[in-house]
Length: 266
Image (cartoon, rainbow, N blue to C red; front, side, top):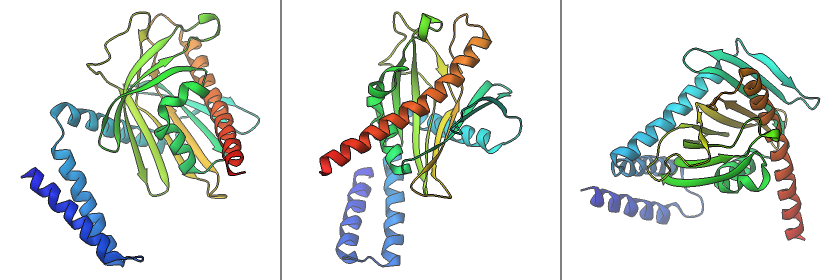
């Protein structure tokens, strides 16, 4: 039955494409959106129980993150840079201390989304705090399971950690989200030589600046349990500085990409 329904939806899309021509009418767009929604529901019906659990974990991480970021009360400033970059923190029941980075980036939201989501596995090339990001599994268009290996901090104050995370990438209008939290995956048990740390809920939110749509308001909610015997003062300093460093590394990456694109165009 599922196969028949999928074939029917493909046929509907085909017919809509023939009807629409160069300028589809409003009702065709409406039907196309409805058929796309039905197609996604059909796809969900084919998920295994484990895949459903991963999808739900990703959605839970996104909703929890949005709830935390929506509450503007109680945030304390940890770092405020001369360029306006700011890291704030607050302590939440059942989660502990969370950090929030707020910066303005010169790039368009779609370009940043492409770098952080579509090119996720390349992060180790430009962020020295990350050794490797590997996608272990993709589920539909929005959910993936990743394994990340972090580099040790200078002086090995915090040794190398690794994380297994479920990530949920969503677009809502012009706003993009990349949320995540720790999970388990059969392909990635705990690795020798690494402390398996935990994260989540975490979330990056990107939206065009109200003053200049070619710029992006970038917010990163970070919640980590690095495990091990590390003083809280050290953890707080490391995590807040990691967020500031990430923003600067991302700026350099996007600037180098822009220069490469210009060179190719010439």
